[in-house]
Amino acid sequence: MPALELEKGVVYYEQIFQEDKSFQRLQISSGTQTAAQFLHEGNYCANGFVPQHPWNNPNSEQLMPLTGNPLGLEIGMWLSVVQVPDEILKPFSELKQASSETHDLKVLQELARAPHIRPGIDAFMEYAKMYSMSTEQPIEGGGISLHPAGLETLAYDYKNNCFVGLHLDSWYKHALLNRPQSPNRICVNLGSELRYLLFINLPIPRILELVQDAAPENTEGRRIHVEFMNLYPNYPVVKLAIRPGEAYIAPTENIIHDGSSAGKEHLDVSLTFRGQFGFAGTIP
Image (tube, rainbow, N blue to C red; front, top):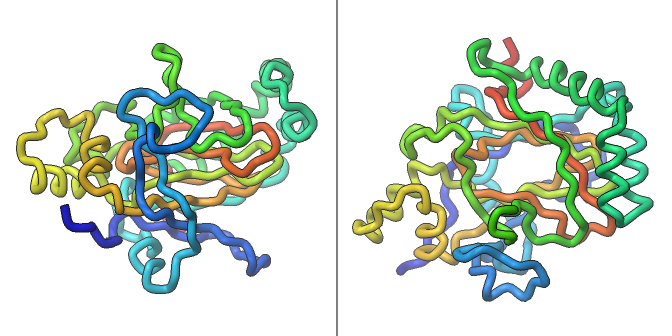
């Protein structure tokens, strides 16, 4: 199979002014690999895929298909990062501090159940409503996720006791060709260090087209992400850095993705809601 060149797809839009010019928001991998090829202590599910190292800073030519202005695009065709106000983050300050002082997930699980956390989650949901583009699509979720440091990918299948690897969300069960219209998510970093969103920038309809062109016999649509990574292992993964107090808005029903705590020293803490979220320029 000929190598697939990086192409325009789902674009990243930077909304936060970067005072630190050394900060690198985006990096790209050299492709994907099966988890069996990746030396990792964790146990991966069958057909689990992870990024192929090394990670590199994209050059100007590579940035062109990765970035763009989302004006006029469907919500499934862009992603961005927003800065969450300090007053919204304040109820989670104890959780943030504890994440840097202990490696015991049980300690954080207890703190996440503290009485003041629920009002904090509700306040973040009210904040997220500012980005909502629909009165019909409810804002759902609101769960705090906790993970150890140093994990290449974070999604875990508790039924089968294994890491999922790069995957496609299907909360809303939309047909593959309709995935760009699916609800997206907002996820805030409540921890004390960078955390990462890993994603392949091609929307699912394009991935379906590429898979069907290369392997017409494939009809198992819900495994389309596995077929794509099998067929095009050299297509890069993008790593998006999320600083503490920042939240990403991303179409996880329309991109192959996962979270990552690789390179971290402290526990990973995040809070996620699903809805139909816009960027600053589209707030009604």
